Amino acid sequence: MSTFNRREFMLTTAGAVSAGTLLGGARAHAASTPKAAEMVPLGRSGVAASRLGMGTGTRAWNGSSAQNRQGKQTFVRALVHAYERGIRYFDLADMYGAHDYMRLAIKEAGIPREELTLLTKTVSKDAAALEADLDRFRKEADTDYFDICLLHCMTEGGWEGKLSPCMEVMAKAKENGTVRACGVSCHNLNAMKDAAVSPWVDIMLSRINPFGIKMDGTVDEVVEVLRTAHDNGKGMLGMKIAGEGTAVDRLPESLKFVFGLGCIDAVTIGFLNPEEIDDTIAKLDAAVA
Image (cartoon, rainbow, N blue to C red):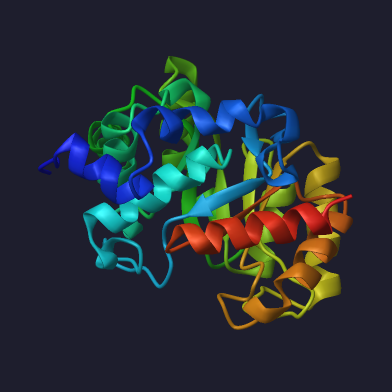
């Protein structure tokens, strides 16, 4: 993928703010770090993430998302702004076509890779294909490792038996250091129940909000599973906090509910522009005690 002129990038990103200001702002306001930017441990995985993560797969499928459909400069500008505001957890996936843009944000804006928590996901159900995915993902993002890799979108119970060869590939990736933690994203209550008790799962990405929108069961059913998983030491990541945008006007209520459960470590929310990032940081800061 071609790059673009650094001066043009900085002017576009910062609106005539200097590159030094762009990259130094997060450190400059460290004394007043918002709750969204606080690093929290993800269960017993050994991985930490900022409490708020930037999702990159809004209305995404087959390598296309609302983020990359806006164009390269707009997407990279949002990624850099999220970093500037203290967000260190970035939720990527092959399905979103997000790896190249994260690479640009890291390289073009000089973001230190070691400061980031990069999560990616694969939909491959074959061990050889998954092994190839992991190599390709690292090349696309130009990183030696991913902090978290998930088997994407588990839609039924019993997935462990069907995907055991893929799980072995992921376990080997952990051993050689190209992946730090493994897990699943779930779109089914039985799949969640399996993940909550699976010794293989380090991290779970689950749909949760107080409205029952785009979730895998009733609120009570889902919360019970999430608490079981948390008690079993899983790193707990929440998604669909605003019901895939249908309850965005009630986001403060949802953030307060989700973090009030005591079993969600961090959340992923998809952002298209800096204004959405700033607004959500302010709302999360007010919601989290």
